[in-house]
Length: 281
Image (tube, rainbow, N blue to C red; front, side, top):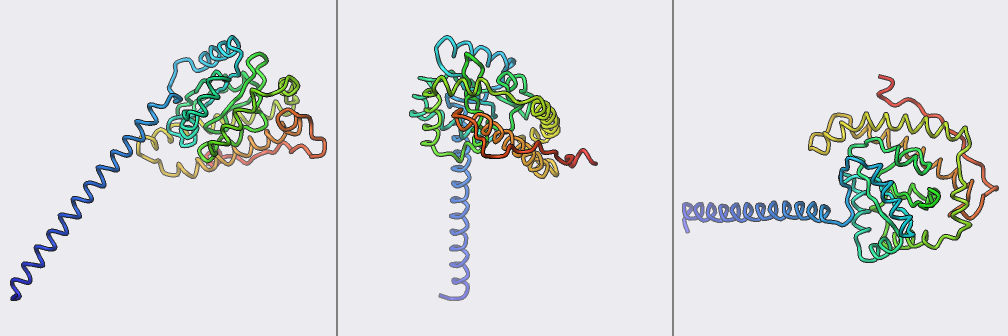
C-alpha cells in the first residue's frame, strides 16, 4: 500500500470513528433527556405533591376537620417541588408501606411554600413559629392542636437522606401515643421570653426568605444570580441554629416523645445573631 492509499485509509477510519462518536453522543443526549423528562414526569405523578393553592391555610383547616371526623392524626407537610428533600419525602410517602400507614392513621395535607412564601398562619396555628426547612413535617393531634413531633422536627430538613425503614418506624409511632404523652405535648408552651424571642426571629427569618425568594425563582428558571448560593448558606445556617436550639428546649421541657422533663441538662441560652450580610451593606 503506497503513501496515498495509507492516507486515504487513515482518513476513512478517522471518519468512521468520528461518525461513531457522534452517533453515541447523540444517543447519550437523547437518553439523558428521556431520563430527566421521565424523572420529572414521575415526580409530577406521585400521589403526594406540592401543588400551589389559592387558600393553603383553609386547606389545612379542612384537613384538620376531616382528621377529627375520621379519628386520625393530622399530618401537615410544608415543602416545594424544587426542593430535593421535599420531593424525596414525597417519594417515600408514595411507597406501598408508607401509604398503608398514612392512609390508615393520618389525614395528610401537602402545603406548597412556593419560593419561600410566608406560611406562619399555618405553623402558628400549631404553636410553631415558622417553617425552618423544607420540608417541615408537623404531626398534630386534631383535637388539641398539640404538635406531637415537636421534639424531632429538625431531622426532616434532610428527608431525602433518611432511609425508608426509619420513615416507617417514625410515622408508626405517633398513632400509638398514650393519652399521657399527648397531654404532655398539648400542655407545652414557651415561656413569655421564649415566645417573644421565637416570634422576633421568625419575623427576621421571613424577611430573609423574602430576600431570597426572587433569587430562588431566577435560579429555578435557569439563571443563578451572583452571590445567591452564599446568601442561601448564610440563611440556612441561621434557620438551622434557631430550629436546633428550639427543639432542644422542647426536649428538656417535655422530654423525648412527651415522656417527661429532663432536669439534668441546662436549657440553651436564647442566642443573638449578627446581622445578615445584606443588612450591613
